[in-house]
Length: 232
Image (cartoon, rainbow, N blue to C red; front, side, top):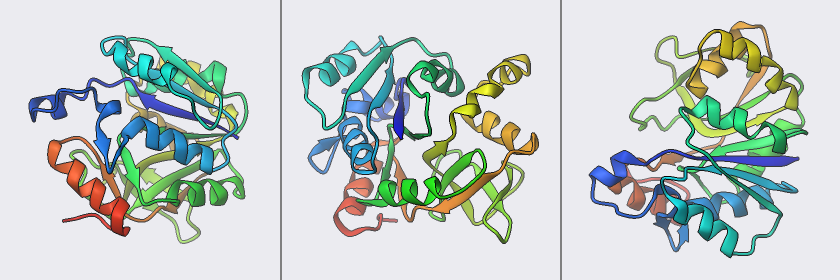
């Protein structure tokens, strides 16, 4: 299993809130967001990690290359136009089943490893980490069947939303041409398209999660890491 991390966004909402460092380098409970995801992916069994960052913040790539990590790390700097393009850009690095995470998704310690272990036992195209903690600015609601298969995404409210972590078989990239033909840009649009295309995607509960988009999310994420739950 390999791992990919999407870290090419500009973090504009953090910047507007007075945070001056790039989002991947924001510290939560003594570790950067990007550092924590890399270490959690390694603990989950990833044999290598590929990260896409933006050249707008070259200090992120410089930091990644300067430090040593528990697994081999590849860094791609690219002005990605959207989240789906970021995933597709990592295709050369993800040629076997892979774990995928956004850089700003903070889960309880060990939750990513538990998710990966469950996902690797499932059939189908992959799995999405889900949470009942609906506090995202733009939550992606997920409708689940009784067996845990995802029935639809983004078609009305439900008890579940995506938590920023995913697991895919490499054939997910077989849908690249179709996605480009349809003009899909957001990862959420791509996920919905996969379900509509008849692919099996499982929804797996990863517990509480914090999406670090605003300065106040930093304290909430730290509380989650300290006690396994986020502040309201």
